[in-house]
Length: 450
Length: 48
Image 1 (cartoon, rainbow over the protein chains, first blue to last red):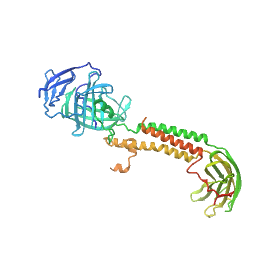
Image 2: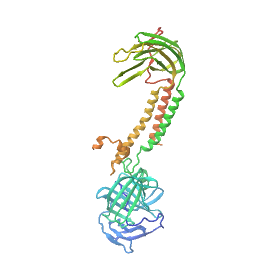
Image 3: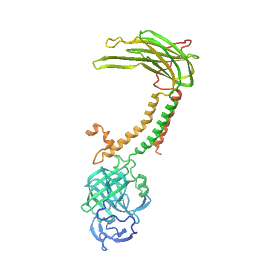
Image 4: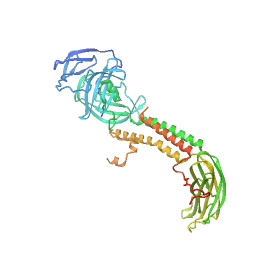
């Protein structure tokens, strides 16, 4: 857990304080020389040699706690300077904190004489850059809001304690010091509330990119911590946003193409009588001129009086010059009747058959058709005859092609969304309030049982 | 631009190009019928 900062007993210094002076002290415990970086603001300092906590607020330096424990080997040695977000900061204090020994994290106090204090916070899986607020955030319906941005609760009712401290601070920090904590997050930011019996403080922390902390203080940070940090933005959110625009453009172009190329000319129209007597008949329609290099030929057959019967349709589109034949089968069928539920009907009196990639040429359409009456006694009587209308058109776009293309275009987006969902579920599983939103909606029953 | 978005742009462009090619060629994997094997010297119905 990355906790908030602990600035509990003094008000935050002004944003641009006058440059404080550097002062040298002698540790009353070990005699080591301590350079105060923010003399005038610093209240306590931990000796960098022996770890003793000194009170430097009064002219006569007093020993508060003799802390003869070897100073921690800090990832960022105190006194290290680094430029972060265009400001040079010096690490002047270090505090290690935990929830009564669990979920430890560390905080470095940074100082710049013109910008005041900031915090570098890490739990070993990522670094955040914190600034104490001089105002309390507003309160929305689900959590605090700051500068128009809402924050969701993540860690609630925590109890943070100081486990170790070294360096100088602007409040009287001591080991064992406790504060009640609550943390709220939005992608990239954490808003932390700390309270003790004297005051409440708020700190806003921005998650640093690994390259930022590495360039500033030479510290290596994990690239893709898992599970994600509480305020780690999903790496798929931005990809999905741009991807949605790309998909929209691609689908729009295809849709436009479909519109422009749909509704081809009629190449042939005619009709023949058909009896439902199971007798095969045939008719040849033509000539049919296919003028494009390749085209989709659509054959529509329609029997308006068909009832309780079906018509088998065998088509052969034959090229007059080459005798190449394009064949297909269709059926028009229509049934109706009445049962205990009332009147019913099913099937269609029409059938559309499509022949793909027919090359340029003059064709005849040979139609063999057989009318069949449905003789089951449970059904009503079938019509004795009908007219079979036949219309041949040059269509352009298969709807199935559009659907296939749409699925293929959406497939990567769906995958990104799935990865985003898994990321959010793993991130929210670290929270005290559990999963919310889509992460909760798409929680499987197995996961719920776990 | 994120490499994944570059890949996705290429992917979507490829799908769009295939869709255009299929439209110009009048092709679909779900067409009802297609070219039948050639039968020399026969004119008329060639089915069944």
